[in-house]
Image (tube, rainbow, N blue to C red; front, side, top):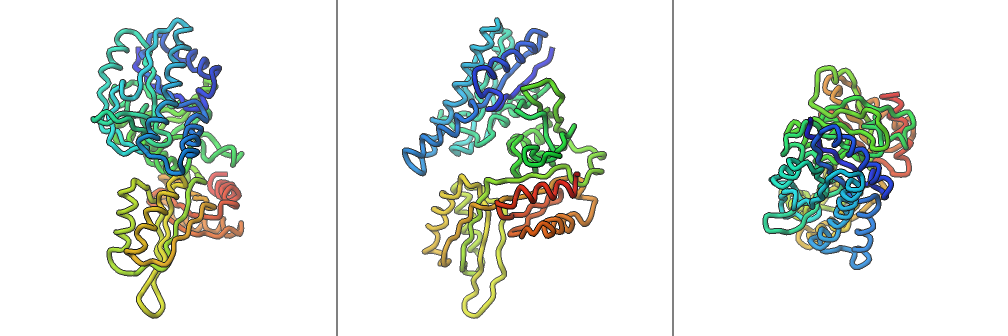
Length: 405
């Protein structure tokens, strides 16, 4: 008998037939004697629909009220999943994130889990019930409903597996595992049998849609080995675990493309100490995550000025502009430019640590395709470039062919 945490994403519970399919899979595990905690997302499209409703009321909804609204998506799914299990004769109880003991900080729409006290979950498991937990949500110590950001159900599952010391954690999605690239864009993409936490973390944070980056970070911190697999078949998935020596033999493990980035440029920023600190502190205080940053060298006569560019999620662009424009009278930069027509293309692999010439090869491939590079960012195991969104998929296929085949 094993204690298993399973997570099913929005496409896996997209309609009642798929929810019944999930229930049948869960019932098989339950009948063989396993204890199961099943974390579910909102049905596919529901969260986007709720956000659309909110924005029809106001372009910038109050984030506390947005969390109250969005949390209802998962609550629909947990109840329907429990009902589907009841119909198969399996005892099941649905719990909201708060009922499952998930305690978060107070940052609405992007809350972080502070701790989990799964007393109710343990008691229900001991009684023989399958426990269905709403992903993506929790509660502050003061009782405020919070959500964990896009892909937050992954984080719920990983954190629950860590708190319960589960024997197995399975992340079910609509693909067979982690691929070397998005197979919808790159037909030659291959499924990986295994991948390191660091590689998965980079791919997740760079736009690969299989996992939420914070959930991978959490798994690495607490040593939760997990498997990404399909809910639509019984094929083995991809194991995500600690890096091993053999993994370094592969230079590039995967190629990712993030189409959900926007670039903000501040033109004519006074080039003096403290200005950048003031800008990025204000963005941080507004819970806006900044990714790539490029500052030009100041030149010319008169007081030195520079142009400062950075990228944010498209969803945060309106809020970022509001924060930046509020600083304009204080800092005196000339104007703010925004560009949503960008893509962030990245290659990732722990093998980059011990191989040279990777960046040069990537840039050469893009040059041959006639694709201009706007911004560059690197780490020990990744290289990212910002390019024109219209050429991004072409660039992804060319880079994948050069490094992976």
